[in-house]
View 1: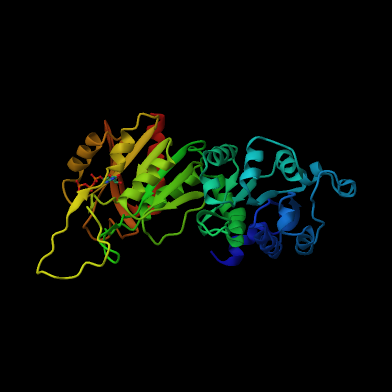
View 2: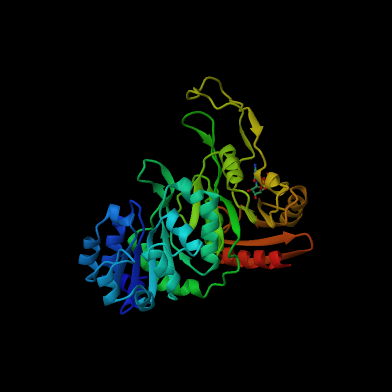
Length: 409
Ligand code: CTP
């Protein structure tokens, strides 16, 4: 998509930018500039917190309109009352959406100008959350996010990476360019996607795990993580609150997905259980079945002609999740097989007490681990469905269709 295609449908649109009180507020300045460049008319409303980070005057200079900061400004209300402003907007974007602002929106509060505008508007709302990663992953924020999505509010980001406080994780404000893209084409497309997973928490594992042998070597596998990431992206587009537990992969975090990066099977096990309870668990990761009993503290030196590794079994995350007593609605596993695909897959379905297993054949040309394409078959107790070879993003959408069907079966 070219730059102009991306922003074409913002020309002439009236966009209300609501700025929350977080360090990322400075990026909202760039957002306003880009929206103006795209031909949108922009007005800005700020929370009290936002004004601690950026001045109303900066936004005024960029938007070309007075910045609104309070409900109680007689002169501003006379020029355009807050209800009028809420009506004026064709789109509303909240950037950064802090944990506090998300909580206030979820509960329908009208305790300041921004919250009141969001309650009074009938325009589509897009939020771009930004906060500390622990605040983002807190069950309270997850619940608020689910509520907001259920109401049709679109979400972009947060992205994963270094955070202002020196930590790292999901919590960075989406880049202004991504927010603009989400507001234009992406928002319109998303509006046509059925929100049939709204209100549900989905945990997806993806990618390989690396089991360290010593400080420089590890046991790994060829999983690219593409299938799991595509499934996480698809579930988020359908309205789910998605936590993606990712092994070491070089893939961008899908929009609206909370990502937790891990390395080993043991770390993945901990991260998955920390992300529960959930409604759906999709184990797409290629978890190592064995790990060194004791990784060497120092680099292993070559001394003899052969070397035997002492490996122990890793916990079977999928089987443990499926054995949970708490109410998971659906547990889905993956099986990569080189032969006897159906038989081995069905065996795993039963042995691990899964609701569904998705099997694909590996070791063939143009399919499996590193490919963008794949063909696969899903099995459940009394049925199966084959998916013809297609890009993994398409397969992910089709798999989510099936998951929705099985949920409602
Ligand atoms: N899995 C898991 N934890 C493990 C191993 C596997 O959660 N320690 C999950 C994977 O995410 C995948 C499924 O189990 O969903 C794969 O099943 P598994 O029996 O481990 O497959 P293979 O390793 O291919 O088994 P085998 O070597 O016996 O064929």
